[in-house]
Image (tube, rainbow, N blue to C red):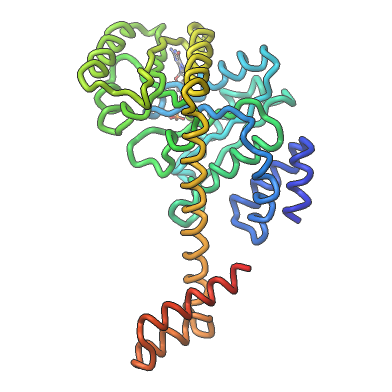
Length: 318
Ligand SMILES: Nc1nc2c(ncn2[C@@H]2O[C@H](COP(=O)(O)OP(=O)(O)OP(=O)(O)O)[C@@H](O)[C@H]2O)c(=O)[nH]1
Ligand SMILES: [Mg+2]
């Protein structure tokens, strides 16, 4: 089923994409086969991560960015990652409302993702959702995560360009530094400029950047001031994103980052397959059960037990 869906995704069928994403989210058997089908065809989309403290205007800014990219005739996919799903139904609803303007536009696809049980599951599902939106033909994929420092999804590992949003006042700069967001920003966005105080935050960031000499592979993070509601500064932000994109292309950073990302994805995949194998087979009657029993009765050495288990894992993975 997933392979059939994947083939439709490659033809640009967004409904098939949506179904495949659901299969991934629910970890349905065979979903991996669908991903394997599309993987060779990915790498066209440009992935932009938007993170920052809660309420800084990430969703509102995404709404403005969608407008800008659509006016350039680029298609857009949006993933809103919500690690605390059951508690924030309201927030999800809010995201929808803030991006509502674009909900009827066929060139825009918006998806919220929430945690499903196992650790690392969200990062895995998010990466694969990006692949699916890429394969279905979205030019730009925007990924929103809340940057609290304990976020399950490290956006800078996933995105080509990472935007860190903050506001004037409210101590966002300090919060941001604590959360380790200072290091991940390719572009700092000081949003809610209409409320004033942006200039002093800009000086603060410049000062910290100067002091710490942060640079991501030779890129010196830039700073853009926006008012996401009126859209002021958004054109300049899009320009800065383009400059960063060109920088990455020019020095080979884009390909390098993506290779690094692919390696991490495979490791995640491996970890989750091993975890599933253990969880499924450790119960009574499972393949692992007897070997472990034998080891506990000293009928088996640890070395031979491990070799047998690896062998079983290999057979089962086929
Ligand atoms: N004055 C002003 N308000 C803004 C601006 N951008 C966003 N807001 C408001 O700030 C509030 C939060 O905006 P969101 O876009 O939901 O912020 P968010 O960062 O996505 O929030 P979470 O997803 O809950 O972390 C909303 O009431 C927005 O209308 C801005 O540039 N100026
Ligand atoms: Mg939001």
